[in-house]
Image 1 (cartoon, rainbow, N blue to C red):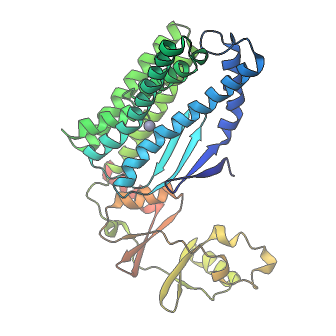
Image 2: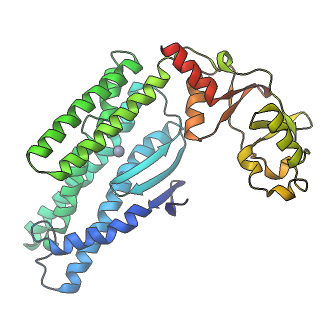
Image 3: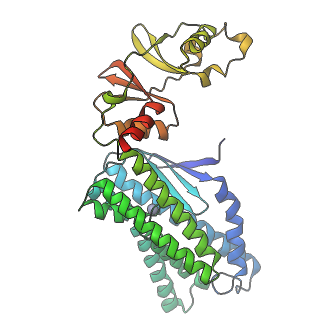
Amino acid sequence: MRLSIEIGRIMGIPIRLHITLLLVLPLFAYIFSTNEEFGFAGVPSESLRYLLSFTATIAIFISILLHELSHSVVALRKGLEVKSITLFLFGGLASIEDIPKNPAFEFKMALHGPLASLGIGLVLIAIHYGLLKVLGESMYNFFEIVGIINIVLFIFNMIPAFPMDGGRVLRAWLASRMSYIEATKKAVAIGQVLAVAMGIFGLLGYNPWLVLIAFFIYIGASEEGKATEMTVPLEGVRVSDLMTRDVITVPSSMSVSELVDLMLEKKHMGYPVVEDHELVGVVTFTDVQKIPHERRDEFKVRDIMTRNIISVQTDDPAEIALRLLFTHNIGHVLVMNKNHLVGIVSRTDVLRAAQILGS
Ligand SMILES: [Zn+2]
């Protein structure tokens, strides 16, 4: 399932276009070419009309890209890894790993995207008025239109609700005066109230867009709330409190059919793989399924295992294990003590602990 394509790299960050964006680009250009007030329908030359509509569409997506890059620059300066920037139908998303729960930093990073949009908007509008003054016309309001859209992006992103940047700014501000968890809960509640109010306004004013945005905000706020609910009970819990200590490892030279027998016997679907007493990978039932039944004698564990080892240290907070399990969508995380494998934490271990401690 590849729903986005990489179009290049900026500052080492892969820039991806989501398929929804490719579908919506022609639609945007079409709207610009047919709208007289906020578009180029009044432009007399047909080819110029389409050129302006097309260029304005591209300019909007470059604006969104600059917004995301602005968030990313703050992250990169802090030494965080920015895995990718994906441009979607309604905007962009910078995928940044392990954002530290540091309110001052989160505040700065969340604010930088909207500030970029505001800056771009103001510059473009200034160019528009500059052209008007000097030339008496301004390329059929091209700069004004793209400028206003950037200002709208600024305002939209500053709505103080998750998943908007404004929600993060609000939480960071609250977190400077209470615990991070409490701040998240408060920010989620504020976002939900705002979403309900927007939804009611939308319904009363017959504005389907507002209803759609309200719905989107409500879901986003609730999801952030759920993620925190999971992490609240795990506060103060270490990986070592949850892990299973007696880990069964398998040698990389074991055949796949032997591995299947072991899985059936132990009723356990994932194993760390060792070679010369060293951890070299992880093998799960998903890997086994890549090999057809009749050929499982021909392949060794080392042929099918995943070499990318996702691990935590024994004294890491349990929440880190939880986050790794969900962001990588995996069933187990290995627990290391320095370089030694000492245990394994599964999704079930973490979820059960969160449930028991949270009740
Ligand atoms: Zn943003």
